Length: 513
Ligand code: GAP
Image (cartoon, rainbow, N blue to C red; front, side, top):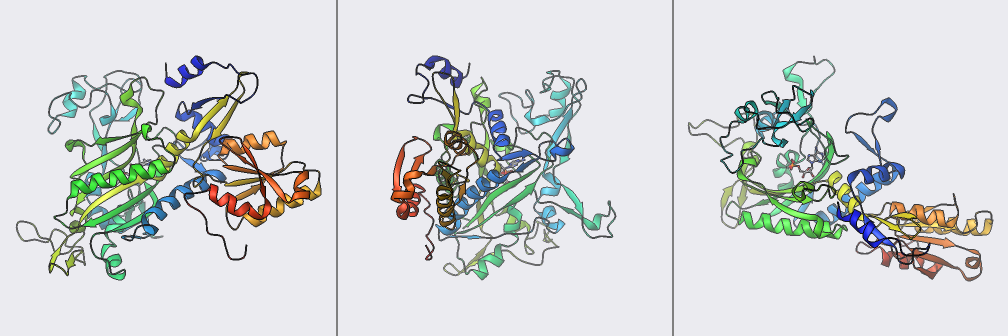
């Protein structure tokens, strides 16, 4: 039995119909978040009117705000608050040669197998028994293991599986109106990572921004992978968003130590978003599982599956921090040659090397790459923020304890009586005055209890209630989402009061207010 279930039963409901001593329960599984997300306008199944599209999701009014807030927090943290990182936004469709020389055309593939019994198609390397236990992984023969019956179908458990074959995960498209579907000269790909757009712009950024090494380039945007087995809501989809940063350092820098430093920084950033450190752990990627460009990768894992009895299977990658060496800059450069003296990249017109004025040396910078997913961060944030508050009568309220910086709506302005024009007018005026400073909404579509409950469920940190007394004393009641405590605040002090509560990212007040 899972911990959260034990908690429910053990603590029982000993109160008497109120929420004075509530029992808090965290998100028991991803399905709970799927249901909340749909019910409250965070995430909808995509193309639902046509029966949906497997593993595609649309972000609703609250979901898009939450995603934007995660991306803004990341951008502010790296690009604004540090002095050594620039931002860019490169094209999604790049010259096909980018993917040829990055190695993606040749190696960005997963092994897939089909089950002969239940006809399921699966990623072979995710199946039980695929890797030999304890033996060397470097030269193991996957097909020999498949034929000998070591590997089990994830769906029906049989070992009657086909040989594995490789499947390139890049989405193909054709460029130009006249191009035939199979015209190789028109072939292009949707990018499977945002990183390559950074590498090919390395010199543009370095020279225009007069940067000296070490410095970084950050980019956030959509990436596309034709995943064999997408699933688990927004955890693994074919279209997703990445927040990637390439940090360029000297060839003789302490690369492994830098990886550790970025791991620590990201752990702090995730905790700052409200994620409990107990739900994060590190995974040193074994040498034989490293991507073709990586010498070392550490994944930060999140406990997306707390309901799984096997503790090892509760975790999935939230992000990875890789030491990419000088692989990419060198691959895209015109000058490097092979043992026979031939150019390794005869198509490139640029040399992406860097001249160090201090040492008078020219070299290809090495790269430390923290690569995070927006969608996986949003899912982790939602799972960690989710809590249920239950009283002794079994009445349950969902409270989304989002960090104020991430909450889609910062303050809801609620009139106590919607049939009283003076109260409604005052509430709407307060909403308008707050809007330039923070995201506020006005809502009068229910009784006050219902309105509070709705705002708790979507994570609004503060509710501002305008009542009869407000018309006399020019003050309102501000209710805290987490403690349900209420405070009377003068309307003239409201902006300052709310801003203090929205720390750590106070929003500047425009001169006009
Ligand atoms: N440039 C390096 C790179 O792309 P990655 O580990 O393949 O590394 C980085 O991807 C992050 O992007 C992952 O840790 C994950 O958060 C996110 N990501 C990757 N594939 C994804 C998918 N199919 N769906 C959702 N997020 C994904």
